Amino acid sequence: MNFISNILGLDSDDLLAYQMAARAFVIFTIALVFIRIAGLRTLGKQSAFDHLTVIILGAILGRTIVASQSFEGSILAAFVIMIMHRLIAWLSFKNKKAGKLFKGNPIPLIKDNVDREANMRKTHITKDDILEALRTELNTDDLSKLKDAYLERSGKISVVKR
Image 1: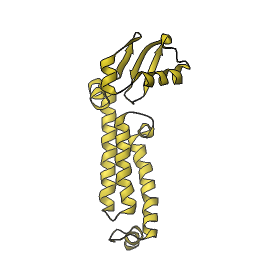
Image 2: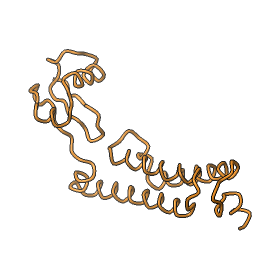
Image 3: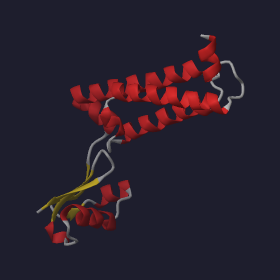
Image 4: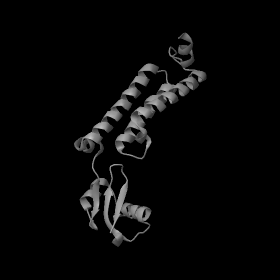
């Protein structure tokens, strides 16, 4: 046990290069396990909820590699974040109201080719942003081909052709 403590610098105030490298190896392995717990969608292009989880996990585990903070406490904190993410994802799947609470709703920006100015103003989405989505998704910049546009829960603008 002393050997592992020395390799990981568990009792050190200043970590040495080999201790950071050993921690990086261990943390990377643990992070893979945590991602399996949280689910693959955590790393996918999903909602702000998923991105927040990734940012928090990265901050905790990154500091665990290079800072002399509690190694075990950091792993436990990251594990709690992964379990919370999984629980909230499960609740959102099982309950539509929970999904709306944690992930939000799509916001109509254009409905039946009529601008929803209040929603566009509230979300800071311009007509140029919608035109970009139209070009990207429908390969056109002809607004007459647009029926609806939404700001999705993931933050992406989606369009529905006429």
